[in-house]
Length: 80
Ligand SMILES: CC(C)(COP(=O)(O)OP(=O)(O)OC[C@H]1O[C@@H](n2cnc3c(N)ncnc32)[C@H](O)[C@@H]1OP(=O)(O)O)[C@@H](O)C(=O)NCCC(=O)NCCS
Image 1 (cartoon, protein in one colour):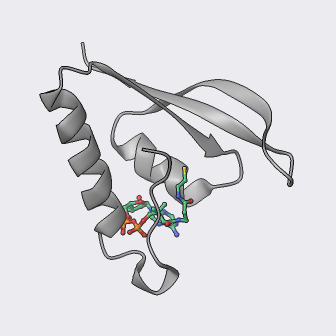
Image 2 (cartoon, rainbow, N blue to C red; image 1 turned 60 degrees about the vertical axis):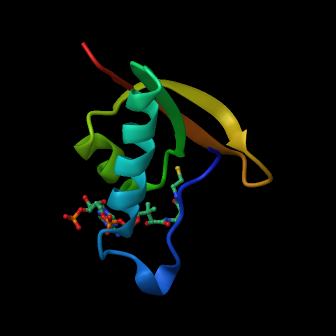
């Protein structure tokens, strides 16, 4: 999957959380134990959502988003 997005007028009703839970459940079903994602450094709402599901910042990709040249935070969630 490339992106999780919820239409602006439908945000903040739990849809993003539901999408992420479905994605993580499918990954677990396939035996995936480590999930990595990129999120824009200035995207606080998405970072908060990922943080609530155990994702932690592990790196930075400079200029990942073009043409804005915004850096991406790399976040990782690992089952132990
Ligand atoms: C990130 C996104 C998918 C979240 O979808 P959503 O349906 O609004 O999220 P939810 O209602 O399930 O919220 C889940 C949690 O995320 C966090 N969150 C979501 N929107 C937030 C906001 N505007 N400000 C702060 N925290 C926010 C909160 O912790 C929230 O839990 P809470 O409502 O119990 O406080 C949505 O904001 C979006 O589509 N953004 C634009 C696209 C994008 O940035 N996608 C991610 C790219 S990596």
